[in-house]
Image (cartoon, rainbow, N blue to C red; front, side):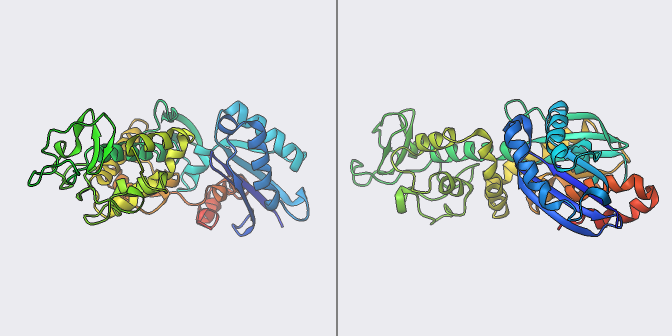
Length: 377
């Protein structure tokens, strides 16, 4: 029995899959990320080894006809990583190292050329010719780019939440005269302090800052009702709103004293890329019609489509890859609405195995077998 091994390793996860030449899955393995630049060579090597070892042939490497590893990161460091791991696990077996961009593209189409748009923790688009990337757009990392990525979406969610918290309408406080409208009294609090009625920012009570009807981006609709842990109640959709979801995720014990300061502190106490965890909250809130979430989704999709347009050659396929674009949800739907004919990638580890099998079975048969290798497990 002749076998091929495919590996796909990014910044957050690594997967390996062993197939027969006819596309029958034999074994799989998975582990944490293996980007040597982001995680360091030792961690990347340990995770890649953990993913690959369970997928190796039980009978040894004699039946292994080809190995392709799609690795994320600097090409030289990826080559060094592959040498370190595979020289130990598969001594003497040739391993083709490709970028994870290539395996992501191959996971969506049997065509050798086209465009791939990836939105995961980061974001990048690439023009692929004969399974080689020849041009890229974005992919500059969270400090400089990655527009429309999970990180970008998560950061936008926190920004919208801070805007929402600083424009919460107040309720009457103990110092509000009888008959006065909440927020109309000229009682000025120190910037960023909380009183019984809400949050003040810049010395202006929150009741002065907005209508409180939720009409604007990030609006919460309800007053400061004082739910558990100091969190506003759900009378007008707080718990279903994007801001409410973000607060519960980052401040599970409640917003406490100064909600804006506490939220900012919670964000800065974590690694920057941890903001990517908030992307699913945006998708859920957008489904529920939250205006801030809908706006973020639309802008993320627009930026991803614009990135793709910088490298796409009309008439060739477009593949959508990465966690943001392979998951069903409003971001993928919006991008598909902007990029006509775009298809969603399947299993990138299976695609790597398919690339290993392709020269062994020929172009026509490999095209016919593509779906067997790349369908999601």
